[in-house]
Each structure stands twice: as structure tokens, then as C-alpha cells.
Length: 251
Image (cartoon, rainbow, N blue to C red; front, side, top):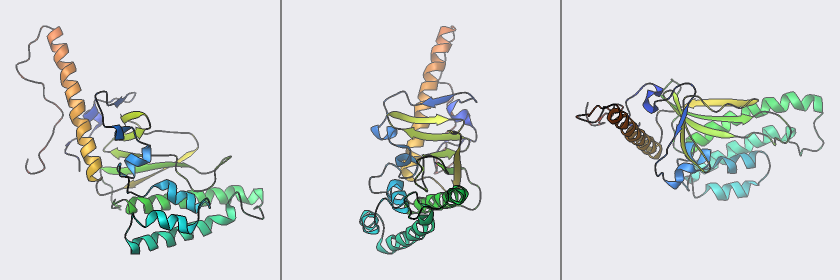
């Protein structure tokens, strides 16, 4: 878990209307695609949702998915994932936009939407487990979240549109070209379905990045508070207290 011992968005000095993004020098990885951060933990050898969802909607072949998974998962696990993906693909295939003969429009709309809403969260859980997360039945302080489109023009099938982490009551996410973004409220898009899954902890890489964010935010806050104090004619004898940090080896 991250070392920041906090329970509210006060960690990043957020209110209901604001978000914060790192303004000091940040690792290039912090501006990665949303799923590379939230699901793959910035790892090149993790399992990408693109590869799995593309197979389920019929855009790639089983040998292609097998070749992709082989260097990323142990052989027994790779076989299990392939079998599960086969099941999801077969379940959705009758409702595919490329299915012949086409399913009657009156039937396809409701049933296709229901299948997308059933399969997409299941695939998300599978991807979480493939990438080292442990799902928790009980609520925790750690959530990995995804939203997806359930029906509409051009949607091939089960999919994802955005992924992010939720730590206590803040959302931590990446957007290509933008450093890590911290927000009090999650990204909301009309018509998208959101699924959130509790995990026992984030990965070591994610925890380290969150710790760095806390330190960065603390440094900025100290500088701002110090400038305000000097401007007000007050000389601080010591640095103002930052947000609480605890040592994992002791109190």
C-alpha cells in the first residue's frame, strides 16, 4: 500500500471542483495511456486489454492471442485464459456486427447490449488477475475502475474506454500527453457503464508512483505556504507540517 496515511481528498488539497496534475518534472511513463497505468502498471510485459478484447470481438485469431500471451503468462495460466476468452468470444459471436446472417435488429439491440454488459466486466476481472492484482470480495481502500460503452453505433462488442485507480476518495489516472492526474471525482461520460473492482492492494510500481505524487504535492504545498507566510510578514521557524506520512516499519 502507499505510505500516505490519509482517508480523504485532503491528501491532494482537493475540493469538489478541482483536480491536480503534477507540475514538476515527471517520468515520461506518467503520461501513458490510461490502461498502461491502471491495469498494466507501466509494464511492457503485462497483458494489454487491447489484445484480449480484440480477440473476443473476432478481430484476431486464437493463435495470435496465444502468441501474445505466451511470454507474459505461465503456460498453464495462458491455457486457462485462452479457454475463457474462447467462451466469451463464442457467447458474443451471434451478436457480432459481422455475424451472418445478421441478428434481427429488434432482438440484437437488447440482447447485444446485455451481452456486452455481462462480458466486459468479466474480462476486466480476468485482466486484473493476469496482471497481478488480487480481487477482494470485501470493500478495501483500493479500487481499479473501468468504463465501457454498452451499445451504440460502431461498437464492435465487449470493450473498454477508460481505466483508472481509486485510492480512498481520489481518482488517480493517466491521459496520453498529460502527467498523472488526481481528481476528487471520477471521469464521467454519458452512456458509459462503469465497473469498479476492489483489490487487496495496488502493485509496487503504482504504490511507488502514488508515494512520489504525495511527496511532489507536499513540496508544492510547502513552497506555496512559505511564500504566503513571507508575504504576510511572518517568518516560519520551521517548515509547515505536510500531509501525514508513516513509516511502514513502525508508527
